[in-house]
Amino acid sequence: QVQLVESGGGLVQAGGSLRLSCTVSGSIFSTDVMSWSRQAPGKQREFVAGITTGGSTSYADSVKGRFTISRDNAKYTMYLQMNSLKPEDTGVYSCKIVRFGMSSWGKGTLVTVSS
Image (tube, rainbow, N blue to C red; front, side):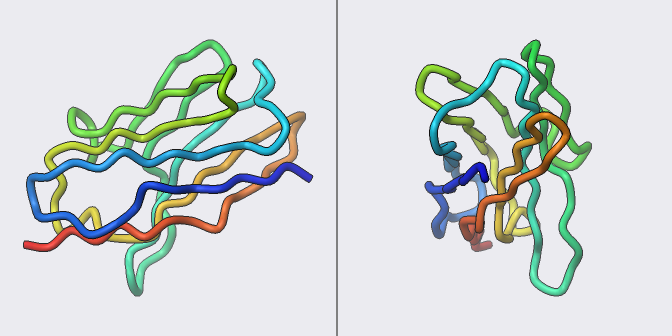
């Protein structure tokens, strides 16, 4: 069972920045597909950003141009750089890894953006 631990969440004012990290137990395989999702209070979890084995990235329309996903396989870590944060970015951010067809999730880290 792959374990993932998120960190870097917190309280920030609108317009500010945060960088989230997702550390994977053991290692990151070059074939792992990884992503970030978030869940706002009272809403369903939604996709935020993903990164493939080849380094291709994808983003939700709501975060394009503001968020950047990256991964460092040597450090077993994936990142989400979040700039120009808005109150609607508030939520619990969770990372996901898909390895050999099996998905694992972290418990999440809370991001709160005040207006």
